[in-house]
Image 1 (cartoon, rainbow, N blue to C red):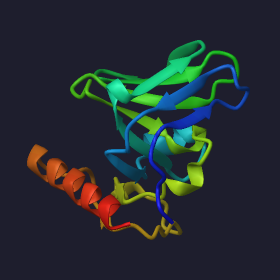
Image 2 (cartoon, rainbow, N blue to C red; image 1 turned 180 degrees about the vertical axis):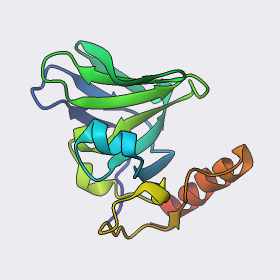
Image 3 (cartoon, helix red, strand yellow; image 1 turned 45 degrees about the vertical axis):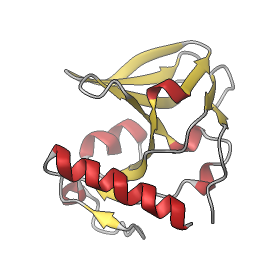
Length: 154
């Protein structure tokens, strides 16, 4: 399945928050950490990283979830759908929850992180797996490059 060219549109469950993305994703991934399991009430979260300047939304968001320094999670004020996360150290990108996209089925995860915390029965068909996170900034940049190459081949 091929990811279509942007723009991509989406919304929260109740439709009070509408969003648009105007760039291809930088990376798609599944996170198995216990925090994501609890935040999503599932075995993992599915995220797509996009350039911040390609992301816009209309509607009211509130921050919530795990209140840790350096990371903020945003939810619809009305229905509390988990919409996206932002890292203080990476303001150039947003981590959008794939499920809010109208064509969510097209954004399969390329990598999985925090595999050391995954539930033992979870098996995902991903290209790359990491026990925690890529260990260095260089490894993360290399992963972004692999994903860009993967998109070009598809």
